Length: 78
Image 1: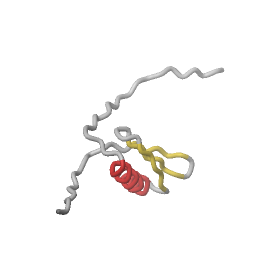
Image 2: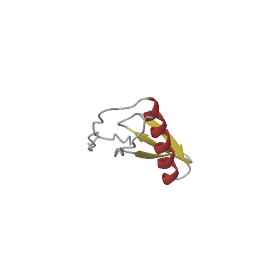
Image 3: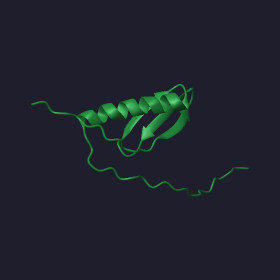
Image 4: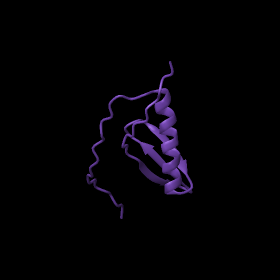
């Protein structure tokens, strides 16, 4: 008897930041990080890294992060 594998799609978050000459992409729900020369490349690499991670360490439930903004005072010396 063979075991069939089923592929389910999960929607995850990618946070992308420019870091010198590369883009760094992070998935806060899983904790994976990757990089690429372009935003699209960084996200593609993050997707691949996350899929490989989830093959080894499956996650049952994923909680969505809450993103918000806040202000801080910036002190300017005269």
